[in-house]
Image (cartoon, rainbow, N blue to C red; front, side, top):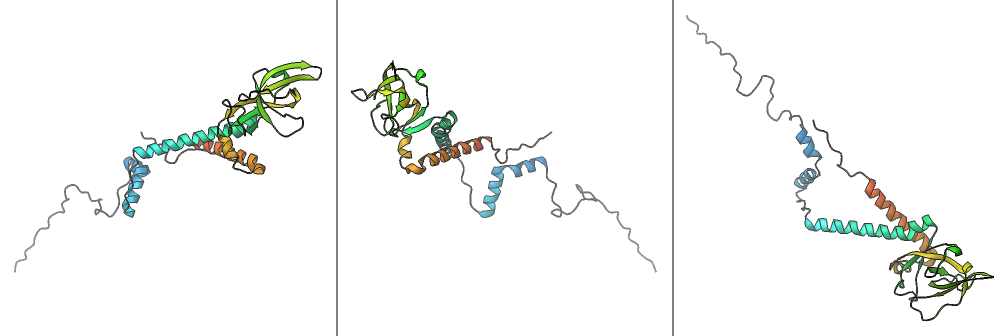
Length: 232
């Protein structure tokens, strides 16, 4: 009786594989630099979220840039106005006052805010716009332009007149002047008049400081995703 022995063939490696390779899909490939960069890209994250939820992400085009630019301009304008009405007067010791009448038109109109700072009588001159008490120790204030000045035994005397008026005001003493107008902020007084008198000052100051603080925070804060990856 004969026994047939079939020689066994040695194992041959499949082209493109190695003994240490695993079946496809068993272990994910290690991440590389390009994949890490794509994962950190906000647009890639938006696209992945859109694919998961089934909701397409709208493109940010021309009108988005227009609205964003308009919002930035509006915020900058609000910050400038708030600083002019609240921050600057606090720093220099001035007082913002709302103009109620048209006696100084067209230079100063009703609804404008004038910022008036204390000044010594020796530094006043003809042509200055000053805020004064027409009657000593009376809280009523008027903002008019100095027409003439004279020195007497009782001190410096002033004659004022509103730019829109046809006659001079009664003469006043320099001690009745509460400040010289430094600058005018137009139209803002109409907004402040909508707020009650008792809380008007603190509220305007709070809003102004809040806007200025928000603007500073927006400028100095570091946006998300701004960290760059160092690549060799």
